[in-house]
Image (cartoon, rainbow, N blue to C red):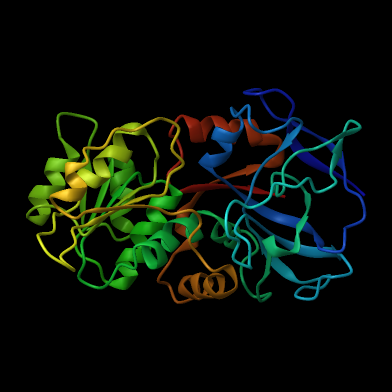
Length: 350
């Protein structure tokens, strides 16, 4: 079958919205006709990565309806509403294999084991999660990355509990999802750190109890220590820049001498693009911990919960989505995201 997708043919180049061809699905593949897709900052990194082959197909969170299934697919059928994500339904030890899906562009195999900046996607059955038909076809797409990544880091990687203190560096779609999950749990205080007052005000509407603008003369680490009498229980970096990767460990509280006297935990969620330098004394003298979090959700179990939170008014997906674009506007969407013009999350509608 033929469909339309955003394709990158050169590293760092703009995207072309052109025709691609999908073969019949393999035994373990599903074809999904998409209604909406999120625009994630990770794709901006991928667009400049020489490690990924070209032509390259992008995007990894979407909502659509199943149109075709392979012979070994049993958990969905044509006509089912579903979320396409990048986190496998079945836990995978080690990196997810990046196999080609069979998509062709201009006679060449197109790269990308999942891609949602397109009208139709064909991907592994493990990346397709069925959802009940009453859920919104536009809003639910961001559950496939922004929500699962931010909320999952709070719920599963850090396992934050009520009354524990949290700081979140970077309040885009992922950071706001982390803040909202922490607020639902009952964490306090919840400190949002960013460089933009408008984004910080927006973060307050998602549950941040305190905000720190780190763009001026304010040292966010010192500000967090002052607000919490020494540091937070958990600090999350939803950006991945060198400075923030280093600051989150400094912003956590110290522990003490002896067993089970741990300090706070720093959680790196944003994809790092630079090397970092960390003072090892922060680990030894305070028994602090540093962890990574990579899509730390259980799609089959957590997606229904996130969607239920939205239905109950606890997690307003409609307010998290602040910009909408057509597929033909994908380069504009990427530009706006890169320039920091988007509060929350942007989506593409088909």
